[in-house]
Image (cartoon, rainbow, N blue to C red; front, side, top):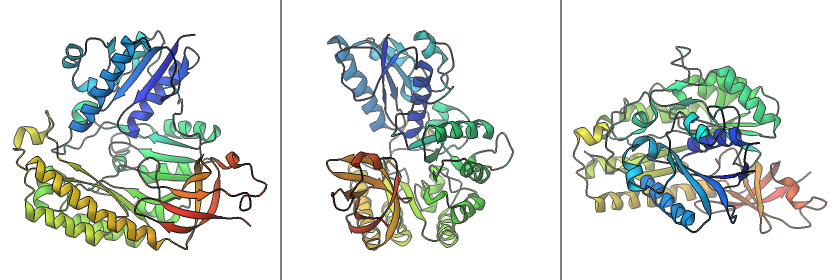
Length: 437
């Protein structure tokens, strides 16, 4: 049987695409896990990211490294797909002719045909995550036209997946042992507007929570404009919907938000954050900011820092503005913030957030929380509570001891829930001890 291996770069939405493709290949190919070293693999699939400059560089570097491995006899064929190849369909084959096939980011039929397999890449899922959690991509594309973002150009307009299809997919995942669903899209709160003429995320959350076996549902990639309050009702009143929200805000300055074409202003954003905290007591908010966008002067940056101090986001990431061809920003603005200034602002923002995150984590010492065990490594259980999302947030670390875990086979707890007491904290991770009746 021929063998295939996939490398996924970029976001969790790319991961889902890879899983759909591998599901189509299952039974036709021996599937070699990402990271597994094997003397020879017939086909290497590289799912690329083309969102910003750093991501493009990583994708190209990965392709070049794999081309060298192909020359060394490690791979027979290399097929590249995803956002980067969708964005540069003519340039990349000229740049890297050693790649055997280039494919897009939305229609996977040509890739599967090249592999000799029928289908469109969306029949099921070959999970590349631990078996107890999975991402559920509820839509494709985006109707927003933010100045800095190339995703609508790459992925097209927003297309919601019909709810019955999502529920069937989620039920199938639950039957296979998945207990946590991470709901993702380019804009999760836009879900349903195209096919139902209404925002339907809250309804979807309710129906997902009724699936036997699903214990946690968390939301990523929400958007502040016209945020649906019934989603907050789900978070506050549905025990299976995590009190956790990923909501990239990007900035707080009215001037910068206007330049970004975000359709909100600072007052709206502040009011939304207050409403979230009031309606969902104990909610943990993760956000993303962009520094160095055209029009961001020192005054606007200081306003951003003041807002971050005020809002006290439990989790925050940041990007340095990257001018992307084909975007509104590249066509209408001058990239007028020097790279050194962008880096300095990034460092200052992340230093501020480090202190906020540390204070939040320390405030949890002594509390008891329900966690799911992601892994057991070197005598330590790697866990998360409803307030930590996999891959992007810190972890709760519980050291194994024969006394505390008497009669329990250590690896048997992976994928299971347990209750722990938080005993220590740094800005990223927490230490805890188990609580057994």
